[in-house]
Length: 309
Image (tube, rainbow, N blue to C red; front, side, top):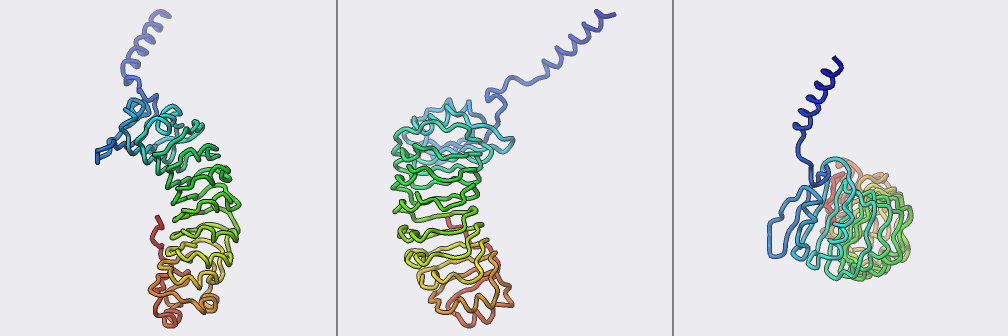
């Protein structure tokens, strides 16, 4: 009887094994990657790290890697090859749920222009990031970084910087060295913006959203190239006075700030905007008088402003 039971168990085990699908070459990791090669317009989809590692890295122009399912770690060898052995790669995105447990050494790279790192559980930006000498756009959002390395100030070609939803409590001084910066988007728990912010004289678009900021430094009024400003979801109780003199502003958002109608009316005195759009945190029926007082400004109530990118 015992022998019969053993034979039955062996038979069941054999049938179950036959029903199993063949071994997944990606070791169970399912990703969603898009790759565009040089001289090609349409991207090609890849579903595993193993497939990507089989590419000819000399032909790659654009790569985006994400994970629509469970969280998984980035293949370190693949990331090394993308950063150091892909001479025509200009844009690299490592998107949500692809964790960066270990960032490989970055060698001298004079071709990568865009690097997006979003929701990767990243706690530190690589110290050798300044080896990306051609970098023009850098985003690190939804991660755990607490600051920037000193080497970040050497990214002389950087034009767009996006740092949203990290663990940064103090505005990183390294940003003030980025003299060619055109776009800055920052969110976090910072309470102040440094007085020296005006050294970023090339800024055209800036966003400080979801912070604890309640005022702007006087030097903000010297950013004469600013055209798009987003100060949504902060702690402003009045219209920030340094903004009154920025006559070139085209779009300004103060949504989701604790500003009352009375405080807004008083703090708007002296504003010189023309043909600007201002998103304000009060209902439409309350700001009709303000609209009549400043007919050259288009006040809009509680709507989401266009993204600055």
